[in-house]
Every structure is written in structure tokens, then in C-alpha cells.
Image (cartoon, rainbow, N blue to C red; front, side, top):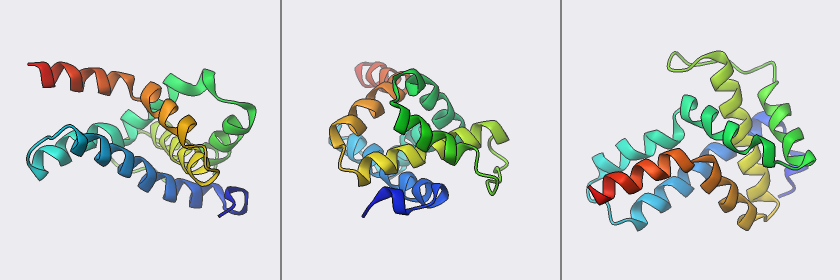
Length: 133
């Protein structure tokens, strides 16, 4: 599928699933027991406020095309925010999801994984601390 054929909100919709899959794969690979615990930990990645912080960690690293994908989704006029996040956070999260879908669909898996690691460095660091304790 050609990502340029999709609208920014369709990319964000798919990107939500891409992030969810990456998170679940990471958590399951850590041999964390219990679906309840897995769900609790996954919320740290998929919550709009945390996604908004994640995109801030990678914005300076984005190429011009990646920045365009992010901005188009973030600025889409049809976005409405949930009660659990501010409008700005939700818009930023939507941009992150669109970016990750774009990278996924264009086959840039290495870039996607690299940006994921950097975007969620704070969450990943907290996971390491919790797993050591």
C-alpha cells in the first residue's frame, strides 16, 4: 500500500495499530506475566499525553518528508480530543501515529524502530528500572 494514497487521519488510524503492535511485542518479549500487567504497561505508550511527549523527543530528528506527514496529521481540522488529553496533546499524538504508519507502509522498519526507541526513551528507561527492582 502506498502511504501517499491515504489521508492523514487514515494514516493515524493505522499508526495507532502499528504503535500498539510494537508496544505489545516489546512487552511480551520481556516475559511480563499477566494480561492485566501488560495492559497497564502498554497504556504508558499509547496514552495521548505520552505520545505527545514521545513526538517531542524525535521532532528534531525527522526528515522533511517525515515532518510533513506529522504536521499534516497534527493540523487536520477534523480532529477532536478525548477527555483524557488536551487538544494539543491529542493533535501531537495523531501526528505521531500518522508518522509511524507512513514509515511502516513505506517499508522503513529500521527507521521506525529507531524512532520508537528514541521517542519512548523515558518510558523504556522506567521499564528497565522497574524490571531491575
